Image 1 (cartoon, rainbow, N blue to C red):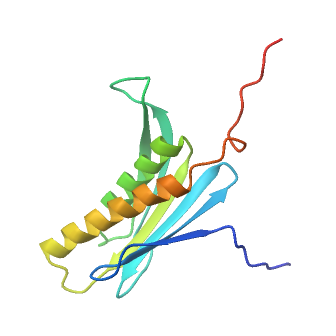
Image 2: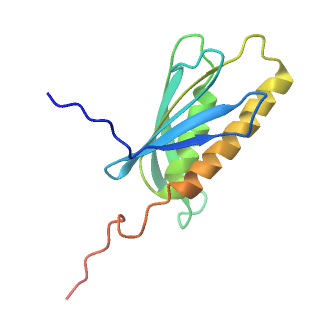
Length: 143
């Protein structure tokens, strides 16, 4: 068995405290794997798998559908669902997002700060992880 450290991961973090978040993103073939964590006890609280599809309102636009698994008592399900659907639609690829953030005694203002920071973090991930055109599947030319 061979073990190697992989350096194909891209790391992200939000600006400072309070409620700093970190993330990693990595291409697995044509699919994207994202982990988001933060707080006093980072963990895996929820996981979502999203796949892109035409929008139901306007088929010319891209959207996505996600399935979510959540550990009992954890509340990251909304975060991973929104993040995976946004990334899948923006990048037109399948995306898995896992998240686990925890701060003791987090109040409503803190929750809103975490939501805002996670949205900005996911937007930045979408900008940085856009696939180069050479990675996209090119349509076969008809002769």
